[in-house]
Image 1 (cartoon, rainbow, N blue to C red):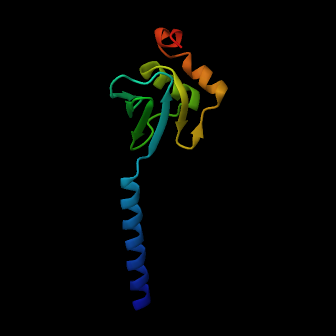
Image 2 (cartoon, one colour; image 1 turned 90 degrees about the vertical axis):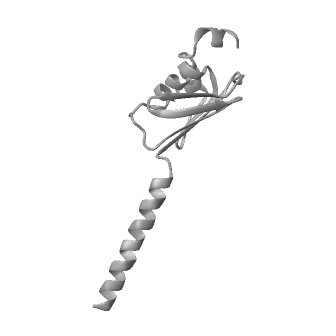
Image 3 (tube, rainbow, N blue to C red; image 1 turned 45 degrees about the vertical axis):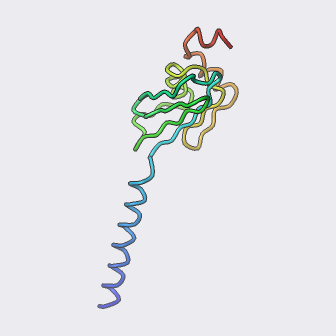
Length: 115
């Protein structure tokens, strides 16, 4: 009986620890490197993700990803707000050269023309 109580206590502790770890880690993290660095820090909410850009580095975080967009569609939404990107990462996925080209089609026309 005592070993059952001990196992129950250990299991309850493990649930609490893993729950606390999940609460601290964001459910989504994205990264983008801008073709042209931002002149001032900038923040925007794009598809439910809080993005912050400083210089040529942008980071997006959210507790959970609110949509099921693919990598290119997600990248397009970001590029449409922050401008053309030289690289884009969403979670464990990294955009390749062709995906970046498709992504940047959504960037503001004046930003693409300048590059």
